[in-house]
Image 1 (spheres, rainbow, N blue to C red):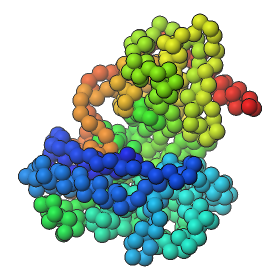
Image 2 (image 1 turned 135 degrees about the vertical axis):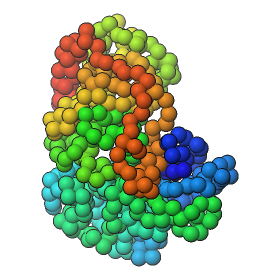
Image 3 (image 1 turned 60 degrees about the vertical axis):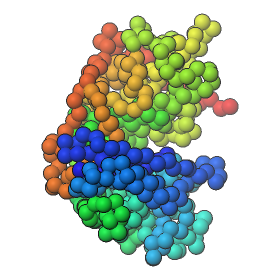
Image 4 (image 1 turned 90 degrees about the vertical axis):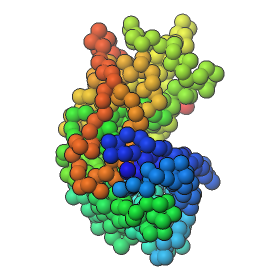
Length: 483
C-alpha cells in the first residue's frame, strides 16, 4: 500500500492505494482560511497537523489492516506559502498563502535587486514566497529577525511526520529562491530577500526519500517507519497522477482557476508572457504552466448574477455549436496571469446587443475561457514547449460543450480519462511508490486509460481563429478605458 496526502487550501485529503494504484480508501478533513485584512489569506499550521491526524486516524479505524501494509507516503500541497519557524521549530506567525496579495510593492523591489527572471525563471508576483518574506522583513521585523527556517506548507507537514527540514524541486521552484535550471538554491536570490541557505530546507527530488515516519506516529497508525517521498507541489503532483511526465501531452484543468500544464525535458523560461516555469517532481524534468485566474469561476459569476445554477447554464449550450457567439467575453474577473500579468485586468462582454439572450452569453463565457487557454498554448509553444494534446480535468470538464469549444479554439486534442481520481493525492501516492521502489518510469507514472477523445471541430476552426484575433484586441481596448 501507498499513501498520498494532499494539503489543499480548503482541506486535507489522504488516499490509500494498492500496488496496482487502485484506490483502497480516501479520507478528508476541512481547513479554514483566515482573511484578517483585505487581500490577505492565511492559515494556522497547527490546523494542518490536526486535519492530518483526523484523516489518518479515520483510515486506521476504517482500513487498519490495509494500512498496516503501508510501504511509503507521498506529500503534495498548495504552493508558495510562507511558514516561518524559529530556531526550535516553533511557528512564528500564520502561514501567508499563495492567494495572498499584500506584497505587491515588494515584487517591484525584488525585481530591481536581482535577476529573478533569469535565475528563477519566473516573474516576481505577490503569490510567490520571496516577496512575502520581504513584506515580513519590512512590516514585522521582530518576526523576521527570529526566523530560522522558511518552509512551504507541505514541508511543514513533512517536518511533523519525519522531523526533517526538507523540500523538493517542484515546490521549491515556486519560492523564487531556486535556480530552476540548476535545481539548487540561489545565494543571489536569497541575499536579495535578506536570507541565506541556512534559512532553507535541504532539497531532494520529488521521487526521492526525504525521511522516514517518526516512531511515535508509526505506532499510532499501526504502520512501519516507512519512507516519506519528496512529493510535489499540487500541479506537479496532479501531473504525476496523470502520467504527464514528457513533452507532447499535458493537462488542462477547468477548475475555479485554469491551468494548462506541459512537461519539458529542458529549462526554457518565458517570463515575457508570464509563463510559470518550474522543476517537475522527477529528475532532469521541468514543466511550464499557463495560469488563468477565472476559469470555471467565470461561470460561477454568471450563475450568481442570473440566479441560475451552473449546470443549468451549461445545459443552455449545445454539445456542438453551429457558430461562434456574436458577443465576446473577456474572462479577467480577478485580473489575469498568463500572458498578461495584470492583476488589474478587467472582464467584459464586448458586442452586446438587445437580441443577445442568456444562452449566447453562456456560450460567450465558455468561449472566452477557451480563448484564455489558447493564449497559454500560444505562449508555451513560443517558449519552445510542444503541446498537442491534454488530459481534461476539473469541474468544468464535466461539460461536453465546453470541452468541445476548448478543443476547437486551442487546437488541442482533449483526452477525457475513462474513470478514477487523478488528482494531487493520487500523484503523491505514486511518488511514494517511486521513493519506496526506486522506479520512476512508466511502471509507476503511466497515463490513464482514455475514455473519450475530443477533437477540434474543423468546420469552426476558421471562424474561431477570426474571433480569437478580435479577443486579443479586446484586452488593450478595455485597458485603455478609464472609469
